Length: 103
Length: 103
Image 1 (cartoon, helix red, strand yellow):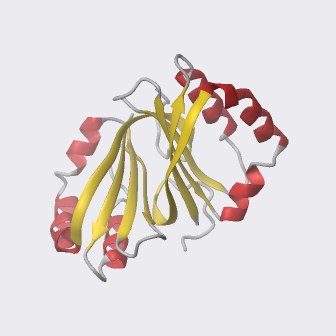
Image 2 (tube, rainbow over the protein chains, first blue to last red):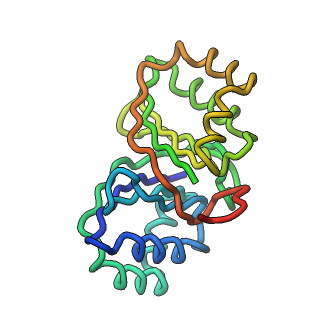
Protein backbone atom coordinates (compact mmCIF):
# COMPACT_ATOMS: atom_id res chain seq x y z
CA UNK A 1 0.00 0.00 0.00
CA UNK A 2 0.95 3.62 -0.46
CA UNK A 3 0.05 6.45 1.88
CA UNK A 4 0.24 10.20 2.03
CA UNK A 5 -0.11 12.63 4.92
CA UNK A 6 -0.54 16.16 3.64
CA UNK A 7 -0.99 19.53 5.31
CA UNK A 8 -2.82 22.01 3.11
CA UNK A 9 -3.02 25.74 3.65
CA UNK A 10 -6.15 27.27 2.15
CA UNK A 11 -6.48 30.83 1.02
CA UNK A 12 -8.37 33.00 3.50
CA UNK A 13 -12.03 32.01 3.67
CA UNK A 14 -11.65 29.10 1.27
CA UNK A 15 -10.97 26.19 3.62
CA UNK A 16 -14.53 24.89 3.75
CA UNK A 17 -14.93 25.09 -0.02
CA UNK A 18 -11.67 23.23 -0.44
CA UNK A 19 -12.66 20.54 2.06
CA UNK A 20 -16.04 20.08 0.41
CA UNK A 21 -14.50 19.69 -3.04
CA UNK A 22 -11.91 17.18 -1.81
CA UNK A 23 -14.47 15.11 0.10
CA UNK A 24 -16.71 14.92 -2.95
CA UNK A 25 -13.86 14.11 -5.32
CA UNK A 26 -12.57 11.27 -3.17
CA UNK A 27 -15.79 9.31 -2.94
CA UNK A 28 -14.99 6.65 -5.54
CA UNK A 29 -11.48 6.54 -6.95
CA UNK A 30 -10.01 3.25 -8.23
CA UNK A 31 -7.48 1.87 -5.79
CA UNK A 32 -8.26 4.41 -3.08
CA UNK A 33 -8.64 2.66 0.27
CA UNK A 34 -8.93 5.71 2.50
CA UNK A 35 -9.07 9.46 1.89
CA UNK A 36 -9.94 11.60 4.88
CA UNK A 37 -10.13 15.36 4.99
CA UNK A 38 -9.94 17.19 8.32
CA UNK A 39 -9.81 20.70 9.65
CA UNK A 40 -6.97 21.77 11.89
CA UNK A 41 -8.66 23.31 14.94
CA UNK A 42 -5.56 25.36 15.72
CA UNK A 43 -5.46 27.31 12.45
CA UNK A 44 -8.38 28.60 10.38
CA UNK A 45 -6.65 28.01 7.05
CA UNK A 46 -5.10 24.58 7.67
CA UNK A 47 -6.52 21.23 6.70
CA UNK A 48 -5.11 17.71 6.70
CA UNK A 49 -5.53 15.07 4.03
CA UNK A 50 -4.56 11.49 4.83
CA UNK A 51 -4.67 9.00 1.99
CA UNK A 52 -4.16 5.27 1.49
CA UNK A 53 -3.94 3.69 -1.95
CA UNK A 54 -3.41 0.09 -2.97
CA UNK A 55 -0.33 1.26 -4.85
CA UNK A 56 1.52 4.42 -5.81
CA UNK A 57 0.49 3.69 -9.38
CA UNK A 58 -3.19 3.98 -8.46
CA UNK A 59 -2.53 7.34 -6.85
CA UNK A 60 -0.69 8.62 -9.91
CA UNK A 61 -3.41 7.29 -12.21
CA UNK A 62 -6.12 9.02 -10.16
CA UNK A 63 -4.54 12.38 -10.84
CA UNK A 64 -5.07 11.84 -14.56
CA UNK A 65 -8.78 11.08 -14.35
CA UNK A 66 -10.86 13.80 -16.06
CA UNK A 67 -13.08 14.22 -13.00
CA UNK A 68 -10.04 14.67 -10.76
CA UNK A 69 -8.38 17.03 -13.22
CA UNK A 70 -11.53 19.15 -13.13
CA UNK A 71 -11.48 19.30 -9.34
CA UNK A 72 -7.78 20.18 -9.31
CA UNK A 73 -8.45 23.07 -11.68
CA UNK A 74 -11.37 24.21 -9.53
CA UNK A 75 -9.55 24.16 -6.20
CA UNK A 76 -6.09 25.33 -7.25
CA UNK A 77 -6.89 29.04 -6.65
CA UNK A 78 -8.04 28.18 -3.12
CA UNK A 79 -4.73 26.58 -2.11
CA UNK A 80 -1.93 28.66 -0.65
CA UNK A 81 0.41 25.77 -0.02
CA UNK A 82 0.77 22.02 0.39
CA UNK A 83 3.28 20.35 2.66
CA UNK A 84 3.76 16.62 2.18
CA UNK A 85 4.35 15.68 5.80
CA UNK A 86 4.99 12.02 5.04
CA UNK A 87 4.86 9.40 2.35
CA UNK A 88 4.08 6.12 4.06
CA UNK A 89 3.73 2.37 3.64
CA UNK A 90 0.44 1.52 5.34
CA UNK A 91 0.39 -1.96 6.83
CA UNK A 92 -3.15 -2.33 8.14
CA UNK A 93 -5.68 -1.23 10.66
CA UNK A 94 -9.31 -0.28 10.52
CA UNK A 95 -11.06 1.62 7.74
CA UNK A 96 -9.24 0.45 4.64
CA UNK A 97 -12.29 0.26 2.44
CA UNK A 98 -11.92 -1.79 -0.68
CA UNK A 99 -8.62 -3.26 0.46
CA UNK A 100 -8.12 -6.54 -1.32
CA UNK A 101 -5.42 -7.61 1.09
CA UNK A 102 -3.15 -6.24 3.74
CA UNK A 103 0.46 -6.23 2.67
CA UNK B 1 -15.44 13.75 14.62
CA UNK B 2 -12.05 13.72 16.28
CA UNK B 3 -8.78 12.84 14.60
CA UNK B 4 -5.18 12.25 15.50
CA UNK B 5 -2.04 12.12 13.39
CA UNK B 6 0.83 10.61 15.33
CA UNK B 7 4.45 9.87 14.55
CA UNK B 8 5.83 7.03 16.62
CA UNK B 9 9.49 6.16 17.04
CA UNK B 10 10.03 2.48 17.82
CA UNK B 11 12.98 1.10 19.69
CA UNK B 12 15.55 -0.51 17.40
CA UNK B 13 14.19 -3.68 15.84
CA UNK B 14 10.74 -3.31 17.38
CA UNK B 15 8.83 -1.42 14.70
CA UNK B 16 7.20 -4.44 13.11
CA UNK B 17 6.14 -5.85 16.48
CA UNK B 18 4.68 -2.48 17.41
CA UNK B 19 2.81 -2.16 14.12
CA UNK B 20 1.40 -5.67 14.43
CA UNK B 21 0.16 -5.03 17.96
CA UNK B 22 -1.47 -1.72 17.01
CA UNK B 23 -3.15 -3.18 13.92
CA UNK B 24 -4.59 -6.03 15.95
CA UNK B 25 -5.71 -3.79 18.79
CA UNK B 26 -7.53 -1.40 16.49
CA UNK B 27 -9.73 -3.93 14.78
CA UNK B 28 -12.94 -3.26 16.70
CA UNK B 29 -13.03 -0.31 19.05
CA UNK B 30 -16.32 1.46 19.82
CA UNK B 31 -16.52 4.80 18.04
CA UNK B 32 -13.37 4.20 15.99
CA UNK B 33 -14.02 5.11 12.35
CA UNK B 34 -10.49 4.73 11.03
CA UNK B 35 -7.18 3.61 12.50
CA UNK B 36 -4.35 3.10 10.05
CA UNK B 37 -0.80 2.13 10.89
CA UNK B 38 1.99 2.77 8.38
CA UNK B 39 5.73 2.44 8.11
CA UNK B 40 7.82 5.47 7.25
CA UNK B 41 10.01 4.34 4.34
CA UNK B 42 12.60 7.01 5.13
CA UNK B 43 13.42 5.80 8.66
CA UNK B 44 13.58 2.24 9.97
CA UNK B 45 12.19 3.12 13.40
CA UNK B 46 9.39 5.50 12.41
CA UNK B 47 5.73 4.65 11.99
CA UNK B 48 2.63 6.76 11.51
CA UNK B 49 -0.76 6.27 13.13
CA UNK B 50 -3.74 8.17 11.75
CA UNK B 51 -6.99 7.88 13.67
CA UNK B 52 -10.58 9.06 13.33
CA UNK B 53 -13.11 8.72 16.13
CA UNK B 54 -16.74 9.74 16.27
CA UNK B 55 -15.82 11.90 19.27
CA UNK B 56 -12.92 12.69 21.56
CA UNK B 57 -14.86 10.93 24.30
CA UNK B 58 -14.79 7.65 22.37
CA UNK B 59 -11.04 7.96 21.99
CA UNK B 60 -10.55 8.59 25.70
CA UNK B 61 -12.90 5.73 26.58
CA UNK B 62 -10.99 3.34 24.32
CA UNK B 63 -7.81 3.91 26.31
CA UNK B 64 -9.57 2.56 29.39
CA UNK B 65 -10.72 -0.71 27.83
CA UNK B 66 -8.99 -3.70 29.45
CA UNK B 67 -7.93 -5.09 26.07
CA UNK B 68 -6.39 -1.76 25.10
CA UNK B 69 -4.73 -1.36 28.47
CA UNK B 70 -3.13 -4.77 27.95
CA UNK B 71 -1.79 -3.76 24.55
CA UNK B 72 -0.47 -0.47 25.91
CA UNK B 73 1.41 -2.36 28.62
CA UNK B 74 2.79 -4.78 26.04
CA UNK B 75 4.02 -2.20 23.56
CA UNK B 76 5.25 0.53 25.91
CA UNK B 77 8.80 -0.88 26.08
CA UNK B 78 8.97 -0.86 22.28
CA UNK B 79 8.23 2.87 21.97
CA UNK B 80 11.01 5.42 22.06
CA UNK B 81 8.81 8.42 21.47
CA UNK B 82 5.48 9.69 20.23
CA UNK B 83 4.97 13.02 18.52
CA UNK B 84 1.37 14.18 18.14
CA UNK B 85 1.71 15.87 14.77
CA UNK B 86 -1.88 17.08 14.71
CA UNK B 87 -5.21 16.84 16.45
CA UNK B 88 -7.87 17.28 13.78
CA UNK B 89 -11.57 17.67 13.09
CA UNK B 90 -12.27 15.20 10.28
CA UNK B 91 -15.07 16.32 8.00
CA UNK B 92 -15.48 13.43 5.60
CA UNK B 93 -14.00 11.46 2.80
CA UNK B 94 -13.63 7.79 2.02
CA UNK B 95 -12.97 5.01 4.50
CA UNK B 96 -14.79 6.18 7.60
CA UNK B 97 -16.10 2.79 8.62
CA UNK B 98 -18.95 2.82 11.04
CA UNK B 99 -19.55 6.53 10.64
CA UNK B 100 -23.10 7.28 11.59
CA UNK B 101 -22.99 10.65 9.95
CA UNK B 102 -20.56 13.20 8.61
CA UNK B 103 -20.44 16.32 10.70
